[in-house]
Length: 261
Image (cartoon, rainbow, N blue to C red):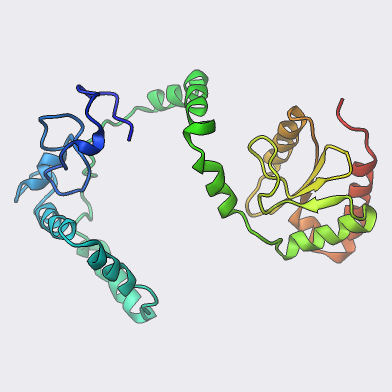
């Protein structure tokens, strides 16, 4: 595990350092320390910052950390399939609202550094920093990242994608493959439909709930830089059968256009 920037002795792996004394389950940052920064307040019975409930939480954490893996697994499985009635949900919700909530009307208890808006803007607009972070996360340093993205993608086309696929095959029979399941990747993108007849062309289906109009041109430009022409079909265009002729015309025109040189 990578050590934090402030570590004094980098020869000692983070996992070999002792656990934080508050019972949170995390390792301390440096040798000789008993707590992570700010976690010592959690051990005070009547902490002026966190309150008595942190002492109770600390005791609970210590008990949980002392349980065997089998015991923890049983606790986790015990909640699966458990049904909570709507009446119970409402009662729990009301019990933590307004004056019943111990934090009602109190300021936040976060003690970390609060950035000013000016500072946040500087961090956000620091392109050099963003590029460094992006490069640090690419390639072999996180081989699991793309695999996780593929797992999140649907393995089969949904109804709207099937409808679009039927329209594509009407004007371009057997020229496009469905790749929305992550089977084909261009750069860091996974297009929905890819031409497999020698043309670097892709067709994307955008759901109106998930995408904005601004994203359409950005996606086209990204694919263009990677050497692919891209056509965006919106979900709203497929919702009415009367509009399918316009979609067929768009696909026909797109498929007959010249490739990017």
